[in-house]
Length: 265
Image 1 (cartoon, one colour):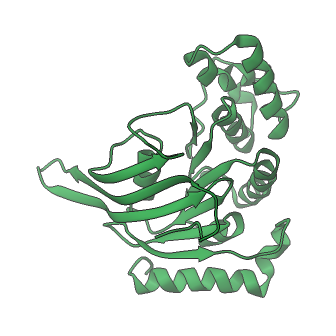
Image 2: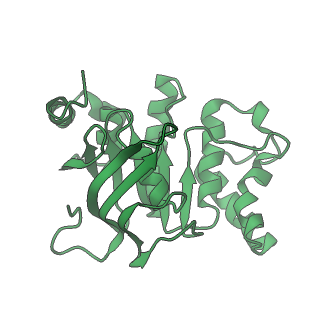
């Protein structure tokens, strides 16, 4: 299934007939993903929504090179993904910051692992800390930050090596509702400033619609793509958009699809 359209530039990444199977503790086989295929263009923000256990996070981990597909191919900029890449930044639900390191030193971890130039890396880290609204917090420690601020550090860390692709796995799931909404707005602003290609997986249909240029809807396990929704909402998107009829139409349409596939009770 293509997300690119006939006139679009070459895809930023693509899944081609991807299957993923796991072996359970009792020796049985669990099929997590079945024949998943879609493309995403450069600079697009695509969200993936589906029920728990549908393989959303597995899909993201395969794209990040952290897990291998059982069958099929995954390509980043035309190159097949065979393992982790500096071209991919990942933000998980928990920011997993090192408590003994300052904000700046946490952001610099990927650059230090890859032995990049310290001066250039520090300048880039400062740039992204400014973009996520944490200028002035460089010397603070994780314990001195709120949950939302810690997640901002995680986003800056994922961006410090200027990746081609930013992957986000339920990044705001542990935050309270108001902070989560605020982070959604800030993420859209960050996307506009960086032009990054982003894939975010979420359980929240409203979040998927609010953030995404397109929403990929997945079925219950084994996960497969049942629908790709192009979200045509006016920008810049603000929280007021959530209360509009047009926004509600997108949300109800995706919810109906999930109900039809058995993804919602």
